[in-house]
Image (tube, rainbow, N blue to C red; front, side, top):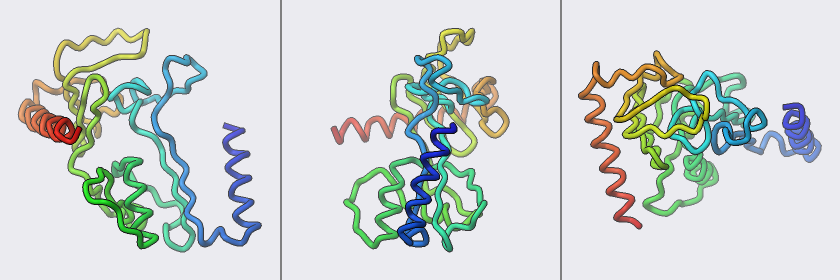
Amino acid sequence: MEEIDYNAARVLDHLKKQGIEQDTIVIFTSDNGSWLSKGRNGGSAKPLFEGKFTGFEGGQCVPCVVCWPDTIPAGSVCSEMAFSIDLLPTLANISGTAVPDGIDGKDILGLWKDQGAKTPHDHFFYVFQGKAVRSGKWKYHRKEVFKVKETTRESDGPTLYNLEEDIGEANNVIDEHPEVAERLDRALQTHLDRISKKN
């Protein structure tokens, strides 16, 4: 952390020395959660469960810090979900650049500027290995794939989690909300069919 802090400060200091810090958008984020195969050296996503190469929040949910003086209110916090692929259409919008039709990302400038804004995405799909989908507070796994060697969890079928109450994805509530699981499974299959046709 010290190294990251030191080098981030160097970048920000350079922008200031060049006199362009007021005209520069600084984005600090990551592409995935903890790299579990590296053990303690790969980091930890707790209280989130699991890490990189899984559909669990510990592998997918990462922080994103955006600094844009005089536009994004300092100290503002957004808990809405967004993808890194949303950065392209957002920055294109800001710069007045057209983006091609059919890209998966969406403009999230509203999330940056307005703390009351909602995500432009209805669903977030995790199509690597086990395949999962998130919509609002709900997270559905068609099949769970575990990377943590010491886990005692077992899953032989679909699971559903209420992330507002269970960010660690520990309590499967699929029996209490089968209609939610069915709706999310249909959305996941529609997405998988769409991307298989594109390829």
